[in-house]
Image 1 (cartoon, one colour):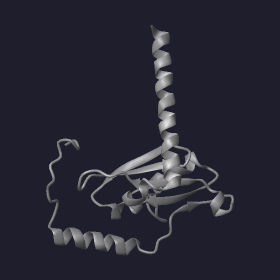
Image 2: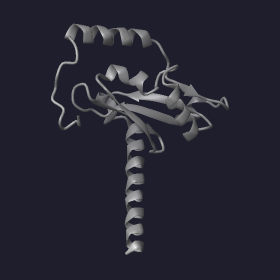
Image 3: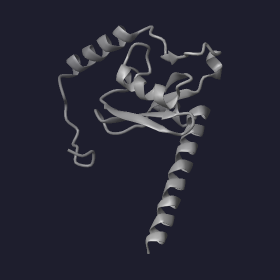
Image 4: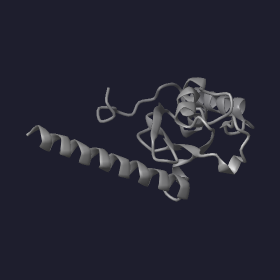
Length: 152
């Protein structure tokens, strides 16, 4: 089912949904944001990988990962923003599979940061990463147009 076909429906009882979310939040409470720092640099020198809530319909929120250099590093659908930090690998000890890709992108180290939906539009670092992403996409489109011209 695509997002445009999605009709809001309850996935479980409201009480069970609230209980599961509370248990999840409690389980991860107090975990730091993940840091990969093989060269023991100052933490502030490490580039940031942002995870953020890009919105969406209920139960289908768009969780996105973007490097501060504007590189898209993945995404996930979540039923609640509360699940995003662990599902995206923002928190220490979560989603080792994602961190393999992060270490490939930033082999000298990185730090993770989660930005809520409420804060996303006013977060300067995330906004700069999104501008860089848009610029990369525009460059890719220009290259495609050039290739098409060459073929003709």
